[in-house]
Image 1 (cartoon, helix red, strand yellow):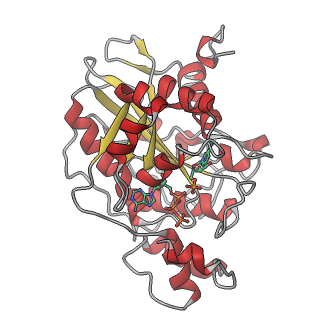
Image 2 (tube, helix red, strand yellow):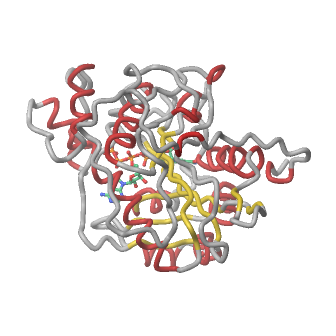
Amino acid sequence: MDPSLAPNFTPVLRSTSSSSSSPSPPPAPDSRKSPAEYDLAFPPYSLSANRTPHQSADLEEVPHGVSRQARDLASYEFPTHRLAEVLQDSAMQPLVVVACGSFSPITYLHLRMFEMAIDTIRETNQYEVVGGYYSPVSDHYRKAGLAPAKHRVRMCELACERTSSWLMVDAWESLQPTYQRTAVVLDHFNYEINVLRRGVKTKSGERRPVKILLLAGGDLIESMGDPNVWADEDLHHILGRYGCLIIERTGSDVRSFLLSHDIMYQHRHNVIVIKQLIYNDISSTKVRLFIRRGMSVQYLLPNSVIRYIEEHGLYVGMSEPVSNVLKF
Ligand SMILES: Nc1ncnc2c1ncn2[C@@H]1O[C@H](COP(=O)(O)OP(=O)(O)OP(=O)(O)O)[C@@H](O)[C@H]1O
Ligand SMILES: NC(=O)c1ccc[n+]([C@@H]2O[C@H](COP(=O)(O)O)[C@@H](O)[C@H]2O)c1
């Protein structure tokens, strides 16, 4: 059944206590907390499309722990600590941006993708971004270079909490016992946000459904032309029911691809292409290679992620086919 049509909505709204002005004492690293207790030292930021363009977070050195998500489905909770509860401008449609991928490891490019997206979305004057999520793929996605999902989720968490004021990581996909297609992952976000939480409130108290958009690079979109990788039915679901924000990637001609692909063309009004005004081509594959060769990866990914990789000895002993590495 279409999850947004499920009867008897059960609103599960988070507490607003995190807006308290007095900072709490720092929690122990990796302690389990309820979503409402996340990041108490930092008030939630408005993600209005009209937010100050230069708002940033410099949290790298903040000496507090970053909550760790559940490591099994039994204790899983959808993270909402940075999901806006109230739409600031009722003339706008609320929007959540979701990036699916390996993130092995997450880099500054993956973080920049969301900032490029928010700038482009603001220009449309149609949407207000109320949340942004990474959904790292599970270990069942057999791709060379994947560190175990628990590490990839944790690195994304560190990157989000230490360098961003609005991004979150959802571990649901990574905890599934089998590989979940992207269409299913987007349905999960829709279920959590629009069915269980009934969207977001406007200032007058009315509830609005949230539009969910997949954020992806041009290479991922071009892979949608391969019927062995993506089913047509899934593409109609992803592009028709949800929608897509595509970051142009050096060397990929997204606009020609959109024009030539029948399903993409059919749903073109649900697709927003993001031009990279400053090209960023940081590649996780290259980062893994540098680590294996003992080279520096400083300034390619957040310090907290580099420290985590070192502490856990990630990527050091692995090997990848030369053809993989030379592609990037
Ligand atoms: N240089 C880039 N420009 C635009 N988008 C990118 C770029 N690199 C990655 N992406 C996008 O980031 C998302 C997550 O990518 P993912 O971690 O799965 O692969 P990757 O970054 O290419 O890493 P790997 O090198 O391990 O294949 C995908 O949507 C991908 O298209
Ligand atoms: N049919 C599908 O739903 C499908 C196919 C290929 C990749 N993906 C997703 O795209 C993301 C990135 O994949 P790659 O790293 O292989 O480009 C992953 O989250 C993966 O699950 C989904």
